[in-house]
Every structure is written in structure tokens, then in C-alpha cells.
Image (tube, rainbow, N blue to C red; front, top):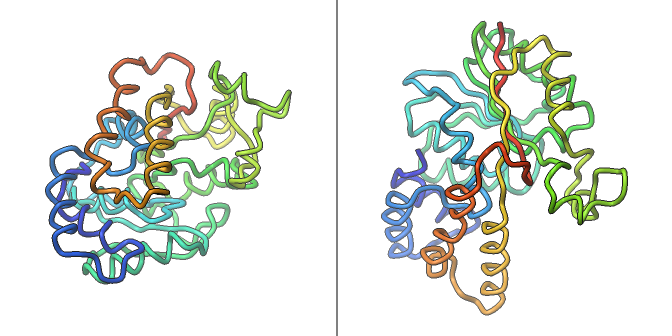
Length: 267
């Protein structure tokens, strides 16, 4: 997962019309060796991937796919993937890169609150850092349950309001920060809120844990600084990726963190 050469090629054409062939090749080799290419996603991927239970031919819906790097990773593992999102720049760039590279991902414009699919259409639905952007998250989970086959799963991640670092940054009782408002978040979550989502939708909550992003956030800040000096991503990434991975190695998933992951099943 996230170690296929296709990842490097896909990302090379993401936001680039004519990438340097040497850069494309470098990314193909590097991502095949180290894994996931997005620094802030290193820890989240480490928590999510073991819960996907992928098998060849499984049908997957990626709700709020963005630039669809997760859709691509699942597709390279043999899944049949539909990537859904509302219109946004990352979505169109993902469509473009998939078309250029002839990648068989079906891109669909749609709203998670009213999914344009028949009942029992998918074996797996992923929604990674998506539910906080949706006005009616409870309705979305019920819609996801409708399109899941019996025994199918929803695997998702959400930002939390429980970690000690957030409590120092939060805006009083609102459970929100100025960054949340800028990013279009409607809420942050705690364990009770996730359990309530599952209960109201009639889903079985199988897993619920945390991930922390102390070092990965620092690595991302360093990358933003280096970008101002025109340092290419492919040069700085080999040095920043190990730093971002420290959280996954040192911080256990039961420690309250910046985000949490969950797995719900349709029974």
C-alpha cells in the first residue's frame, strides 16, 4: 500500500503539466521504498491501513476523495474504486492525473449527504478527514450504511478536541480553532460523538483509536519554509519523511491525539 511506482507518476502530474522525466522516475522509486507521500498522512495511514481488510475485486467508495491519492493506493491493491467529492481544485487535478496516466478510477461529483448510488453497492467506504466538513454528518453515515453491503465497513478519521495540545489551542467551549473555521470545519469530535454517530446509524463500532501528529506537523512546517526558498519537494522529502514517522513509532494509539480513526460495520 502506497509503495507502487504508479503513486510517483500520479503525483508528478498532480498540478504539473509537463513534469521532468527524471523527477517522475525519482518519485516512482522513492515512494515505492518509503511509502505514503504526504507528511501529515504518515501516522493516519499507519492507523487506517490495517483496518481496511482489502481483497482483490473489493468495491470501494472514497467519500471526500480530494486529489484521490487514497483511491489510487486502493486501486493498485486490486480494489475497484469510485472517488466522490464536491467540485474543488484537488478533485479536478486528481481527475486530470488519472486521465493522463490512464488510471481506472471512476470520479463522481456528489454530496455525502445524498449519495448517488443504489443500496448495497460497496463493500468498503472510506471517509478520511471528511465528516468535519459535512453539515449533517449523521445523515452522511446513514447514507453510507445504505450503500454498503451487509458486513461492509466504513473506515474514517476525524480531528479531535481531546488531545492536550488542542486544549491549549482551542477557543473555549466551541471545540474549534481559527484554523478549523478557515478550513471549513463544522465541528471537532470526541469519542462520545463517534459512538453516537454509529449508534444513530445502526452501525457496529468495531475500532476507535487515536493518532498524534506532533512530529509530522513540525515536518510539514519545515517543508513550507523550504518551499519559500524554492526547494523542490522531491529533495526535502527523503529527510522529512522519517521525522514525520516518529509519531507512529513512539506514540500509542490509546493516547488522546490530534485525530482519531474508527471502523464501523453494517450488521
